[in-house]
Image (tube, rainbow, N blue to C red):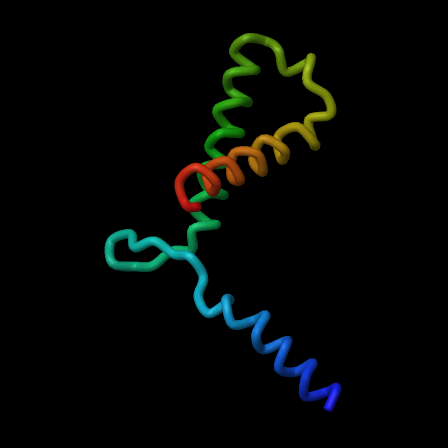
Length: 84
């Protein structure tokens, strides 16, 4: 009895995961997370060129943590603004 109840509860919890959010680009469906990740990578590249142009990259440390954080922050912001 307990096992069948647990199985039924698991099935009910997973019923909302039937499809991944996707967007059609030229007839091909791309996952939305991929578009958000690309936007984050472009934002990090823009941040790097801006910091290098203004000679401020030396003041940002550690770089191995800063740029991935910019990617994650931008990707999550794009997701929240446009796709939720």
